Structures are given as structure tokens and as C-alpha cells.
Length: 351
Image 1 (cartoon, rainbow, N blue to C red):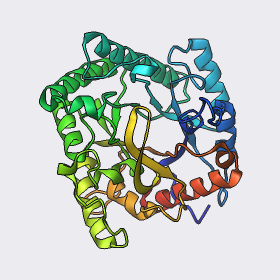
Image 2 (cartoon, rainbow, N blue to C red):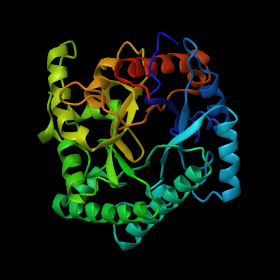
Image 3 (cartoon, one colour):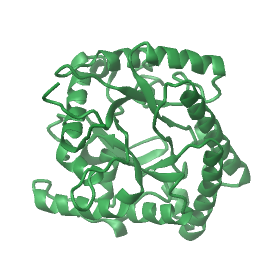
Image 4 (cartoon, rainbow, N blue to C red):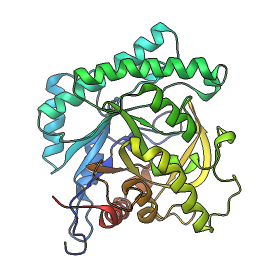
């Protein structure tokens, strides 16, 4: 324990890698939630373990229409493994029952319905005593291709939709966080993300979720070249320029950041279904990874003066699209936990 003196921010694993990218012809099957919980609970490094999980409100893990009885069972299953729940992901996309935030009235209503269901579950989990912190995560559910057809009108429409989502979140005393992922219109670059946050203008209800893998791609401007900070052929061995670019990026987005994902990225993009040109998560020790996880997390978790922020009471590992063969190895989760501990050691605190 003396090697890891800090207890905050709490360390969470994401459950959704058991669902995202799984299923379908030729693909690995979904990994059941209980298996994800078991693997999370079993991980251990230097006597330290994960504190909790963040979850996706989507079948087969947790239905967005889960009953109170089902949520009570979920709370019991999580608690029995010595874990808690933090942030939850609302399935706001069209294929999962939602719709684009820049869509027509029916699509916007579907988006907001999913936000309301997500907030309902999040509040219930708080009341059950299994969720002491965390946000409800969403994005714009609008493709970049559709957004660029009329940027000003679409950005305004998305902002109006998210303002309505904030009203819903206030009813449930929840906070919403938009994940900065380049495949979603209106937030495909850091400048557009800041613009959207400012247009919504409800920092008490709506903030930013920084995922280290996705925000790395903000530097390169894949879906918005006009907002690139670094060239796409950037030499990642130039640590000084990378640090300067991260400083510029985080200066703009850190004041809005209320949820944080530790992750690794090799600075390449790929498309999967509606996720066009999105980031490729890597394992923390991937030789192609471009992030120095502990160091680079500090740009988000410390302020301009280098003081530790305490905005995020927990941080979560996010790594999707790994084969089940990799995900079912205990060493995978131990290496991830070690990376999480390195961030907590460098930028954590005690209470």
C-alpha cells in the first residue's frame, strides 16, 4: 500500500468493452456483465484493486428499460464483488432507440427519451447506495457527414437539444457529460466541442468527458483539419511539441471536464458502423501507443499552476475492440490496473 499512497480519484474499469464491437457474424460474442465484474474484481496490483465499474445501459448488460427489481439485482451483484458504479452511458443513438440530436422532432424526442431513462436509472442506483459519484454520458448521436451539410443550423439544433437534456438532468439531480469523440457531428474537433459547451451554457449540468485516446486525435484534426494543432504526420518522438499541443488542448477543455477516461491510442483512426474515423484504443503497454499515460493524464487532472484538481472523484479505464482472448486473460486487467494506479499515484489525493 505504501507504494500507492493515494485513495482518490477512485479507480474504475469500464464494463462496455464486453458489449461494444461484439456480436454479429464472425465476431466475438458479448462478454456477460457478470464476467466483466468478476474480471474487474479479480485484478490486483501491489495489494490494490479496482474500486468500481462504469456501465453501458444497453442489453445484454443493463437494459435502458430495466425495472426497479432488475436494478436492485444489479446493485447487489456489483456490491457483492466489493465494487461500486460510477458513470453510466445512455444509448442515445438511433440504432439503440435514440436519435440524432440534430434530427427532426421525432428523432430529438427519441434522444431525450433515452436521456431521461438514463437519468432515471442513474438516480435509482444512487438511491440504492451503489453509485456514490459519476455522470450520465452521451454524445450528439449525429454523424459528421450530416452535420457538415449545414454546420451553423445543426450546431444550434444540437445545442437546443442538449439544453433540453440539461432540464431533464436537473429533474434527477444528475450531470451529463459529452464524450469527445471525433466521429460525432458538432464535437468532431476541440474547437467545435468548446463551441457546443458554450452554446449549451449549463456547466452545472453539462460538461465534457475527456477520453485520453479520443482527445489525442483532437490534436490531429482528422474530421476537422481546420482545427488541427499538430500535422497528421507528426513525429511522436518530439515530446516537447506533444506536450505543448496537449497544453493548448486541455487549456480549452479542462474547465469543462467532469469525467475522465484513462486510455491508450496509437494515433490511427478506423471506422466501425456509425463510428466513422474514431480512435483505436490500445492496451496500456502497446508499443505503438503514443501516450505516456501517467504524464499526459496530468494535463487534464492538474490545473494551469500544476495543482491537483479534484473535479473527477473517479477515473475509468476505457479500451474497446479487444478480442475476447485478450480480455479474458488476468494479465490484461492487471496491466490496466497498474496503468490506472500510475495516474492515481501521480495526480491523486487523500481525504
